[in-house]
Length: 133
Length: 93
Image (cartoon, rainbow over all chains, first blue to last red; front, side, top):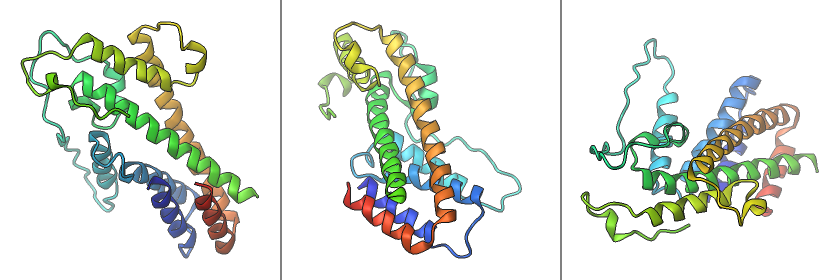
């Protein structure tokens, strides 16, 4: 469950001692948000969630003087299909793993990604409200 | 969320039907913030995709903003109160 994963991560962040700096904590929370989205049961089978997790794991490697940016193809590349040129370039950049998808899959994945994003935003807002009550 | 797999997707040679694409675009249109107002009007696929991009960007921004706010809250709240708030919101799910 998306909510449980995020709340557990947040509890861990809250308990951390000594308290991290504000910017580090913000980054940790943001990381937890995206990780929870990717781990939620309905999305774990999705291409976007695997691509997102991969991206998150790459960012977690500290202490590298040279970050070698290797574009790992999670999805097999589109074979050239002259009747269906790659469309929706901007959308492909916004949806994790979007570049390797066929147009039809991209649309499906986008719908799922948006639903997860919305749920995450609602969860975070609920949490903020819970703090102030 | 539809998990129906059309038979046409299993073969590389066959094409995804226009109808399937339209259905998926409509589904995206329904998810946009102003969907209730626009329900009956036919919006072009290009427009739907454009607005979906804007919507995704705004959601990303919200995640950033909310992370910032939550971080500030955790800074000023003691651990016990923080955990109580977290439990409360879990019960609200």
